[in-house]
Image (tube, rainbow, N blue to C red; front, side, top):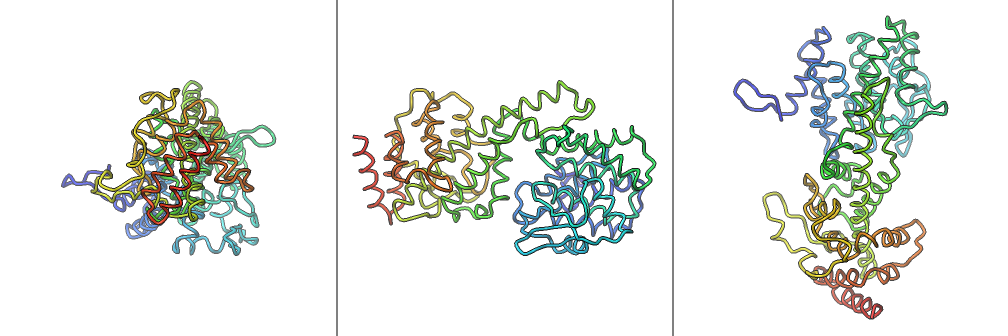
Length: 473
């Protein structure tokens, strides 16, 4: 929701971005020309509004900012400004600021420049907080985006924002590097940040003591925990809503609804499932010297664990469904747009029911006895949908619901092993072998339903359905 203006209407995102930056600078007793504030805020807004982004956008800034805290507001404005792998490079204005400090190799590998002037205080201060060195190669999953986002801020405000205030704000951004474990000495990311802030304050002769550094780290992890609070949602559907927003960000093929292929969709869901399956809940939220309180921290981790388990089950069913469609496509002519088999997603303002879907041709009865039609988190998510719609995918999942009901919760892990075997880098099953080992109420009915959708492959799909039924018979 935007800020109300004098006439009662809402400000748009660009106006709110300018207001947030101006307010934060004022709270730090910084006087800056309005034209300069506007230029910086508009650059931030442009960088966060690129077409590829569906989650890390201006609304994400507003979710994280604290109107009473200029440090976390500045961190919110800048922490996701650079998203190199999603934006497929740098926005031109941002690239012009960073160019003297980077080496970008063919293929997009980014490293810090070998030679940085000794008087580049903004760079050296930012690098010290992150523990980075000139010449170091930056990893997208090890701080590349966070460091370069913080560096843009440090360079823009060098000599304007006081060093101590910049130290706290850069620390907030560093703390948002996600999902890190302990180092070789058993120190948590927050403890490592504490040590680096102590060293940085000494290196730059800042007038801060250990209590000040402790306050800075607790402020930083509070901000970082707010950045990932979606993992601890009370409702699994809310967690999945934001998970689904990330899919088109990290999988460019999904950004145009109705065009992406079955294989592209399967790969996207498969990668997300594997990531969440291997993510320890304890690595999502951070704690440092009693912040957050132990009871609150434990509750965060427990809800995260529950959400990850449910999300992996949900993603497992979606993955299995995509593998079934991919196998049918491979055996009837090759990969194809998923909309060809599933049916298209209705444009805004149009009822989905008005468009023909594969589910229109599935049997209405029949389900595994261990999967009651009105019980279970996964069943509810498939039937009723995630909490928010995604433009590239249906909110609910009728075909996956059919698969889930007919495979059954008890048999699902075994069937997922078959799907994994088919989709490994070196497949251990053929598409035909995979389909023939599915429950008889799954493969053949879906093949016949697909035959009604894909008229150009109708004969091949009908023949395949008959073959699967004969194998079972």
